[in-house]
Image (cartoon, rainbow, N blue to C red; front, top):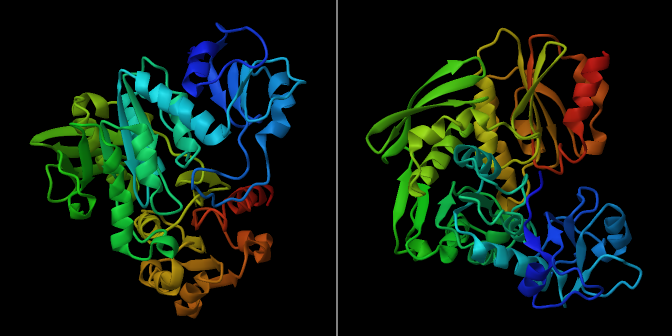
Length: 462
């Protein structure tokens, strides 16, 4: 059963506007949508422009405008719409604001946050944010950001969708340019803020590891008074200016994984948690997922939740498509980790592959790691030692050429400058039952072109 999020009157009050078409002030809004493809009956549709305002940028340019889809939203059952220009053809109520992003979606998200009685955990980091978010949501049984909804529209949309009686909520925050995380955190006002890690990501825009650390730690600027900052044991937080409580996790802290026992693709993990041993079952437990679980556990502790009780739900956290999901096709193990890549996550994925106990061969299909700036060649070439135990590597992208050229001839399966140049059949024909293939790269190199799905489809027909 859908839960009422707002009445139309409450939404209008949050936006400081009025219903512009007809009197349905007690109409219930059961969801919030910015996309007619996923809109459900009873949703409040927000007609966003394709060009972000408020000083935000988007890594994916769009010429779309939600105002062009208002009739479709009405036909799919939208309860009302937030618009910047009144559409006289609509029969559903329209709430008119100057800017549908800042005055519309952000205002609605802020109003939703202000009325919440439960606690909010916010998180950011260079790698593994979404995986950690999914684990934390499972541990708390809490509503959370959908997928990677972590930017200028994803964060306010997440807040607007949180039921007012939720005991906990989890909000993921990311960035494209400096200053964005602080803005998102101030909107979110978390009781606990987690920095999963700081790694060489977004170097193209930030320039240095120190600048990345400052940006990630700026999540503390939105922390509520008395809130807690959760960080890795080895992270220097002096650049943050945060003077409140700090909880650390990982080696050298009071919260760390003590031992683990592999059970097929799963791990039974024993954590040391401030002097007490607690256990949880980690699904598909690669090394980076063990780290993510530890970060999530520390956040649970900071929220005041019993860690042993929370860990009984760890197994409920599943992998998301493109984020290390394992498929078995024709006896071949395919590891789809194609949604994103950076030096830290690439290292973890390659270590996980080489650490697998199996009789067959191990291969990697690797795409460029983007946004590394002038350091990109060095970071790609530095992957070579991590591939030494593999039987073969195929590379896609101009920067992966630096890795490919450093490989011994016996490991070279091929190189393509772009995803369009990758030829499917010769590659899949060399795979056989018992082999394992890791598919890893930045989203635009493998995930968006659908290369993992094409490989799986080809293997099913061979």
